[in-house]
Amino acid sequence: MISEKELLDKVPRGLFIAGSWTDGGAGAFPVIDPATGETLVEIADATPEDGIRALDAAVAAQQEWAATPPRTRSDILRRAFDLLMARADEFALLMTLEMGKPLPEARGEVTYGGEFLRWFSEEAVRISGRYGLNPEGTGRMVISQRPVGPCFFITPWNFPLAMATRKIAPALAAGCTVVVKPAELTPLTTLAFVALLEEAGLPAGVVNVVTTTHSAALSGPIIADPRLRKLSFTGSTPVGKKLIAQAAEGVLRVSMELGGNAPFVVFDDADLDKAVDGAMLAKFRNIGQACTASNRFIVHRSVAGEFARRVTERVAAMRVGRGTEDGVQIGPLIDRKAVEGTEALVTDAVARGATVLAGGAPIEGPGTFFAPTVISGVAAGSSILREEIFGPVLAIATFEDEDEAVRLANDTEYGLVSYVFTRDLARGHRMIDRLETGMMGLNAGVVSNAAAPFGGVKQSGVGREGGLEGIHEFLSTKYTLIPAD
Ligand code: NAD
Image (cartoon, rainbow, N blue to C red; front, side, top):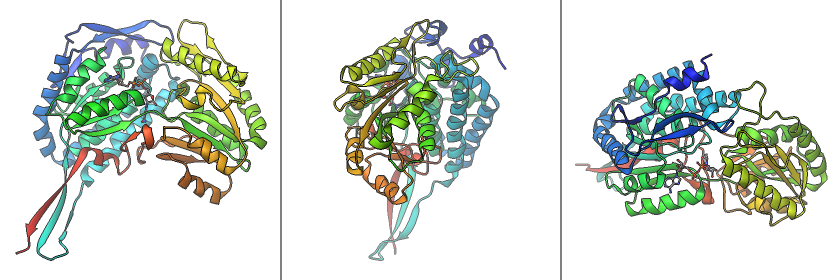
């Protein structure tokens, strides 16, 4: 296994534009290990002018990349998948260092993130259209799919690899070129990944990466540039709304993977062992910092006490520490602000009558840790039921009947994912129809899969990533009429 120092020594530190590593016009900025508060490395800080240079490169490469045979695009993605799997341990360690998640989870993200490369290498050669006579019999209709053109991607810090590959892989498969701006808190994984793409044979200019501490200033001019065709963003709903407004000016195609407030509904007929296993995954994976993290545990009154007892036992035994240490299940939160936000939500819930069953407070530094927490008896109106927690806090509220469960579950402006635990098949089907979310786990605590369409309804977003649907975010439908005679 490579040492931390060896890994950091070889990680790229520049901007990647038109196939070359360059300095950033704004100097350099530090990337911090959230488990220690120490600087890992310093990397290039891009200016808005650097951003436009990256777009220039993507625009220059667009035509040739779109004309590259699908099989060639597919082979490059497949080679990238093989290279990533061969270096899975290095990518996992890099993510743990910059983001904090426990090493086994980082390893899981390499598998998940890699699957998008494999899946879309397979989809690249299956882009098809339709051909047929019009109903009048006077013309032939050809319906084909064209790449949308140069894309701009803005990604978050919580899944540094998968949020990049989930966008880059379908874009490349469809024949689009790309500028990526990773989150300033976790840019190293994207830099290492683009170096890997180059090694896999990706031509210069097809993917360009700009790292910056001036996200809004850099993104604005790129989004306003008439040569850009598509904006794809994963991050918080408030930032997503601003970006949609900016994209409206150029009538850009947009994909938005935004925040969530997932309900986790446990009915009185649920298999409680399965519900508890599912709860631990849905809540504590990624230290609670996932858009799919269950935010509200809505448990039938008759089983709420037993459910709380069992999850508390599991949570109290969780090992907290730096993600590189053996057996650690809970790493640090991403920064101090995240710790303060989590603490404020717990404090508000307790002030409104909730009981702390485990944890409940930050852990003294170094690093930005919050104790894994269970609170029960969360009252209606508590902020924790309304806002994304993004921390390791499992908050339990109760319900009396199915209608109330549905009303509580849907009582949010978000609609990304829901989790339902019941042994009653008919009830399960009713929940699929009644819960207003883009995805659902029925007796399952994790739903993500490269072969499935990931995305939300309501203010959780627009568009889908992965699955058969994912590539269509990067294709435009073209209809051509050819007279029959
Ligand atoms: P964020 O919105 O603060 O930042 C996301 C990205 O946007 C970062 O790269 C950031 O630098 C950039 N950014 C911030 N302000 C910007 C601006 N004004 N203009 C341009 N870019 C800007 O979100 P975050 O804290 O990095 O990530 C957590 C959020 O992401 C949560 O809300 C989570 O639910 C969401 N998320 C959603 C999904 C999904 O697929 N639906 C997946 C992961 C995370």
